[in-house]
Image 1 (tube, rainbow, N blue to C red):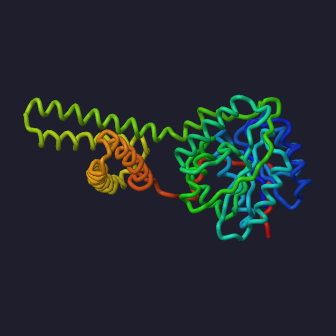
Image 2: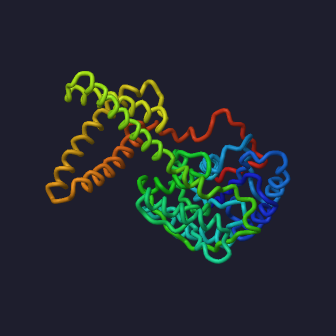
Image 3: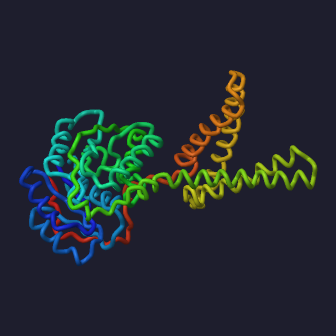
Length: 366
């Protein structure tokens, strides 16, 4: 068992947390990733090392997601086959709850249906408004995006079966959005999740937390917003070109064809460079072919569903809205996951030029 704690400018409570974890579970290793906190916090990490933790030091601040990936890579290298519990460094997680997550992992070890154990807070009592509001917003956004409900989408207390570690290093995201991206992709990757109730603790209104609840939750939806804006731009281009050509030539069908080809080209370029940010030249031909096939399939689906719904007595405007909503979601998913999907390279979880130093390496388990 390895307990992983990403930390950026932590408070003085971190060494005490390490001592308590080592006392409660002596056989478990504790790894802290210093995410570029700087010399001003070196004494905190030195005290944590003296308390029994290994400390991995990043040369600069990259974000919590990056720190977690760094820790996962170290866990795989030094403790192959060990399960991992991730906990926050800001004092929100009680030692008993962290150990309870570890115990739950032990009980489920060896099961075929690998599941992430999530320590979920109830958000009752004296909870800061920003945390209560942030959880409410994130919970609703998550259910809409993922299709399943979770009571605490912001929890950093997670029990991770060792089989998940290679996959976790491929999930995109470098900062707080990484943890939400993990949850959004969890079931699609073939894994499950189980909730374990934990206490909601906020020490001095949680001053060491760097999470911005609404802003960091909305980062998850940024690609969808860009995709919607790109679709709107394509619609405007299509309408404008159609109006101009029809006014000049008076020919409807050729004007429609040229307008649609123009708007599709604009949509393809914007989605490739801005929405999904895939600029590799080698993939351009494949992306054009797949995008064209998708456009044809979406057009055919639009005709089929519109005909089916209107024949069934559904009013035209309801049929149109329903069809467009379904096809919008389908188009986004296919373009993200197929047309503009980037290569999956588990070993490229962090920049090659990053300098990482070890105050105390974890000994490789034998």
